[in-house]
Image 1: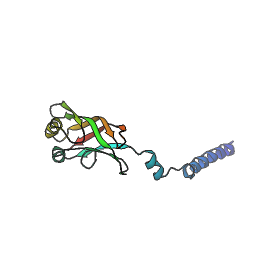
Image 2 (image 1 turned 90 degrees about the vertical axis):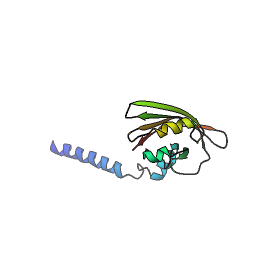
Image 3 (image 1 turned 120 degrees about the vertical axis):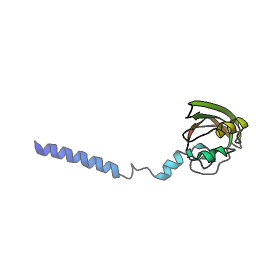
Image 4 (image 1 turned 30 degrees about the horizontal axis):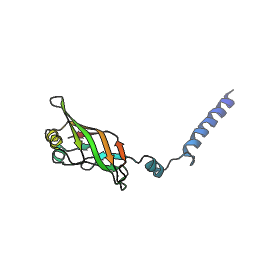
Length: 142
């Protein structure tokens, strides 16, 4: 009775180990990058956490591919909402183009460490006049 059970357990362990090292089951980093290429909204260096002094001085945003490849997309429109931690309020600004309008500059000027920037409704346009919707993005300010 013990031998068939031991044999069965050995076969299962061998099968699991073989599946983990089988080269047909492996996915290369190259394939992942190509399949996940997408436009990303960026401010400054593109990081999700930014120093408050840097954000207050920003005047524009952009869209780039997440793999840093060349693109001809330009930011068309986005909505920026700032959630202020100290008084638990928020302010919203709708922005056309990549340069910040006066309302966007104003709400960014009120930032303090701990506040959160939420960017939604992001659209970009390329040289063929094709409009692409970009995934929303959150930024933490420290």
